[in-house]
Length: 77
Length: 255
Image 1 (tube, helix red, strand yellow):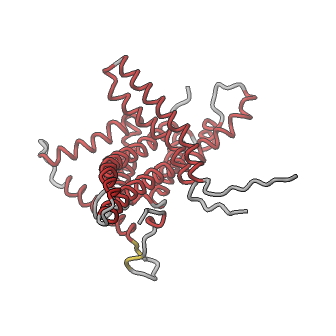
Image 2 (tube, chains in turn purple, cyan; image 1 turned 60 degrees about the vertical axis):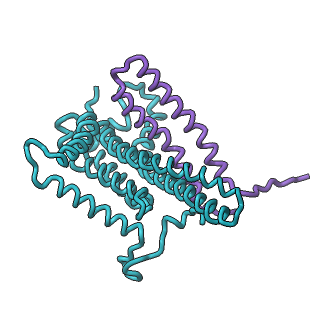
Image 3 (cartoon, rainbow over the protein chains, first blue to last red; image 1 turned 30 degrees about the horizontal axis):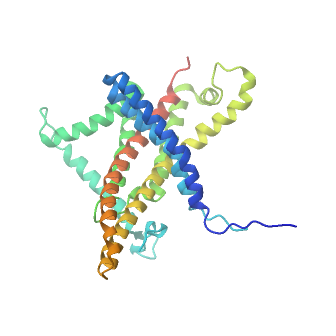
């Protein structure tokens, strides 16, 4: 007996939600490590804060690309 | 009316039906370029050795871009070579991002793909040019695709990964990072203010007390406004420093 699976509703928000998992964990690790390093050596705070923002921008790039993919009009079969 | 992707393609305002048709976004971009040129020209017109107040502000901003973005990653000599174009990228991105929060203009010049694409193309051509100028054409690609110090069977695995990561992913990610940051920020802001208007003027005016949720969305609107200003500054900084880092990676000597 063959059953078919149909997808109803939108998949794009679900796809973005999955993509945001990795990005959230990555940003959390970066900021946590920066706070730890500043606690060890407070005089490096300016330099480490700069590097933290750079790391956050690189990590969140993939989540933002996922938002963009949601707007591509994929053809329905 | 909830925000949608149509917000980014407003109707044509000036010079309709000609190749120079301008809609609201393009008018905003022209305005930003004119304002930037005006500010920078007026600020550097009569420079004194002991600076007055406006000149101190200019020197602070330009000094920050020069020291912590360009000289720190590229060094003095290469930094002086590439300083004009990296500073142009920084100020252009900053100006275009900030119009997303100015009350009359409400649309960021970088939220359509044109400006981020051009800036990423400039950065792409720039780091390949810097590498070829320093090392010579074939040696640059050889040192980028075949990093030294690796046993040769691994090159079968490593070179395609390096090629995709250096020559394909870098410009695409530069474009999409800048573009989607601004698009997502604009949609969040538009959503908060549209929700506030709906709650206050439609529900509360009809006497439905669910309209008091408008206070919450109003507070969110203020918070997202501040976040959007911060994201505008951060994305301009990130694209400038990534351009400088890519140039530095292309120019560095092998050890």
